[in-house]
Amino acid sequence: MKTIDTKNIIIIGAAGRDFHNFNTYYRDNNAYNVVAFTATQIPDIDGRKYPSELAGELYPDGIPIYSQDQLPELIKGLEVDECVFAYSDVSYQDVMGVGAIVNAAGANFTLLGPNSTMLKSNKPVISVCAVRTGTGKSQTSRKIIETLLEHNLKVIAIRHPMPYGDLNEQRVQRFATVEDLQKHHCTIEEMEEYEPHVARGNVVYAGVDYADILEAAENDPDGCDVILWDGGNNDLSFYEPDLAVTVLDPHRPGHELKYYPGEVCLRTTDVAIINKVDSASEEAIQTVENNIKFASPNSAIIKAESKITVDQPETIKGKRVLIVEDGPTLTHGEMKLGAGTIAAERLGAKEIVDPRPYAVGTLKDTFNKYSHIGNVLPAMGYGEQQLKDLEETINATDCDAVIIGTPMDLSRVISINKPCTRVHYDLEEISTPNLKDILANFIQEHNLG
Image (cartoon, rainbow, N blue to C red; front, side, top):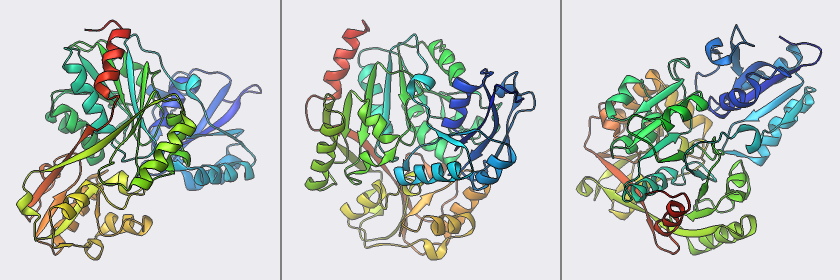
């Protein structure tokens, strides 16, 4: 309820950072009245409500969520004073394009910083962030966890939010087994992030309310010595890190200084990892390294390969293949290839089949929206219809075999009518200092082990 002393606020987001900013800064703040969220990037998020149970006592009716396309009308109709930009992996041109829309409608345009949104844990925290989607955060997180486990430390991973279902039910989620993914009705994007952890026996938390999630993780029934923040897109950590790690991608040289908030991650990092050096040009690697030295001169620099292994290489050699890659990496991550494409080239595929003529439903819409994607298929699966469209597109494509380049076992959730093989990728450092050295110092500094 607005009073003479309160400001009307819209939070512009994509079902993640926007909810976190509200929970940490606005929820119990009488100086502000959040009148709406707007949503983009993720299908079918708008049209819902942020429920009253999560919104708190100041919002007994909850908070409506609208499409970002309605922003100018909402600002005027709801007498909005200020709009808060709260999603990630966005070019500076696009950020300020939204800012121009907001200012043109008469409102202020705001970006909240770490001091307003980071929570403090009573456990040591390592954050793994990135300058773009698809750089290799998850494989870096797995490498850090495996290294800490060698010291007999209990590590709890907390993943950036992907709450696309019932927000009340998703307030705090704990994933310890593959069955937990089914119990929580995870989308493909969620499974891509959680499954590699739980398959290795690691516990992962995610959800909506990251203060409650942090408390649950700190008191996990299996124990907790270290919290690892496994970031999403190129967002900032939700928790104040004791060791900040940022991953960079030489396949997109220069993006580390052109995307929000990826550059913030780079400028605040302790360790900068240049990943995928085995498949990038020397010139691109040098560009990224020079930009690290410019933006974060005191950070340690590690060069690493994204080591690729394939379950059944014979499925690829000499065959006409369809490649299915991680969805967000191809869409708003703007990549044209992934691990599946590299595997196809290295293992001598006869042809990479273009899926676009066979795309149906929402997949056809995805190709129209993200015209840069080319002849690979993004593993879109935010809901049942997208999952059906993905299955139908794969099965209709005229090819000999399917390469699954996503981090989860796609054949577990859809029926594929052709031979298929999975591609796996792991971080392999090729320079010093390396994570083993850096984590040894971290363990000593925090009296762990």
